[in-house]
Length: 213
Image 1: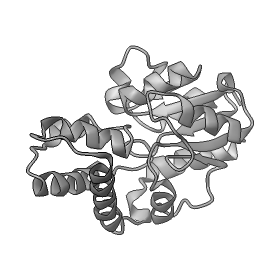
Image 2 (image 1 turned 120 degrees about the horizontal axis):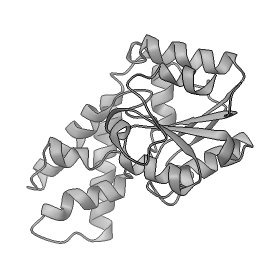
Image 3 (image 1 turned 180 degrees about the vertical axis):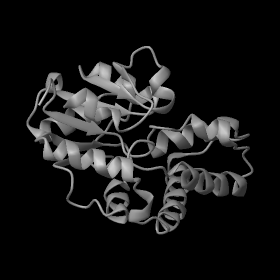
Image 4 (image 1 turned 90 degrees about the horizontal axis):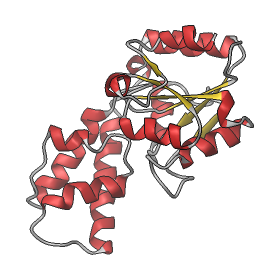
């Protein structure tokens, strides 16, 4: 084993891809209240909590929404999203991700999820990964979403490891900022691979084996 004893993974955009489901659910909510919403705005929501995402969408609203109205809109979006998630199955877990996770586990690393999503456990179940990770820190146990480091610091705490011994794997700038703020090294996929604060830019998930083993 190399420098790291634990690896903390963001979920969406790293282990699996549910961006399109988020987009479809938010789009339906936005259309119903007459607020413009497109893929570009949706990209701003990556790694952001549900309520913070709603605030971004409502920037284009022609009227303010009170806390009760916002809660209802967020709940409606989540109901739509969870219905779409039922389409997921273990087939949505790529062989590359599955094999890399199994290699890291076989090498003795502790593995955790660090995601702002409150649907994390449902998604893991749909992917056939229930019980696979040593710890899950998600939207059900945090008060502050990324770029605050809370979701990662709690994951490390659950693993019983200091930040210096954990690597965070992210695809969004907000997640990389969160990792840095918490004292974690980071590996970046997608847009995070081009971000200056990323410790290890990656083109492929399998490169984690080279970094960690």
